[in-house]
Image 1 (cartoon, rainbow, N blue to C red):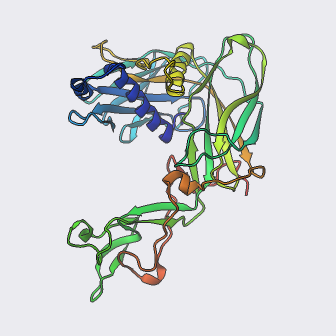
Image 2 (tube, rainbow, N blue to C red):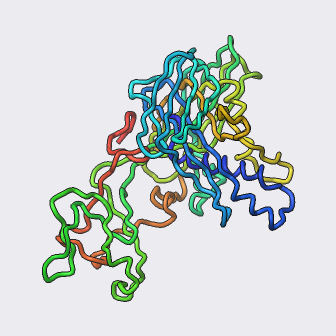
Image 3 (cartoon, rainbow, N blue to C red):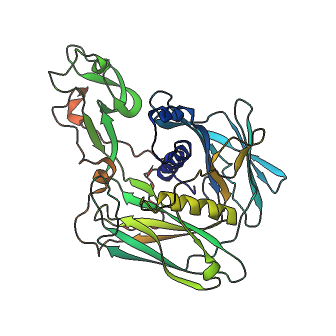
Length: 423
């Protein structure tokens, strides 16, 4: 998929924040202005289809402000009819995989030179339509290089400024066309911890009750593979011998497991001043120094339409500036999807079709020096807490505690060795 779980969440939050800045004046805000927060209610569309052999997905969310607190959040939009129209003729229906995520058929691949348009019908009958996007050709990535940068990142990862590997690429820009590029990346890191249980413990099998004459919970014969919390934990009078009710235990992976991480920065480029030239050493990624072990990164070079480039350029300028007084104030990032019956409704986000050149590169990290946070700490802001011998409650049989957790395949984890991984 072209956009990902972590970048999508950041995208939705940032887009809505910028939208709120349009509603709330940037000058001094009177107390009564705060009531305006409660009026924010926008549809957010996030979807890029490409020509790669991978799931093609469209995400729909409703970003809405709480009328009392002014705080906003996003809710997935379910039971919508989502279709992609190809060349104004063929209609391809998407199916909802999880709440708010709509996937095209497994054999669908975008094709260069063909036009794509997104069509949405919500469960209440509201119709939306995107502009038509023609998939542009993209030149291949010729070479990838990595260089360790001890002061690479300026953004803290859970309180730590980690070093990074700067990733640069070489490619030949076509001379016979005006090209617009976007780059992103996908990273695989070895993961040792597969489950965290808050106020619970990991159970491989379903819990059928307490054993006779014991305080231990007993497992059945059906696989459960999840965190179990005893019913008593919600009762104020049940406090496990006076200890604090809040606790968390972390569980190692039962098999090999890889964490999948994604870029969230926007990096776009217009070739108007370098058309037809050879691009050498163009930095397209910074991979944090999470841990000493090597990692695998996939760099993607995408070909955007002119309109998509302008949208993402504005997004880049408004989310990656310094925040100083001289910065241009944000404006509404209204995309290319509109309400057919109500042109005044502002729909946030963008639907585009972009051909991609993808190339994987192994970073052995042998040149890395200095301290690193560790992947678990970088993700959670704390070291792992294994289940102790004297756990908060008992799950029998005790000699087999603690169990190891499954590495469940998802957008962020996989038990399958990725192509290009080196041991």
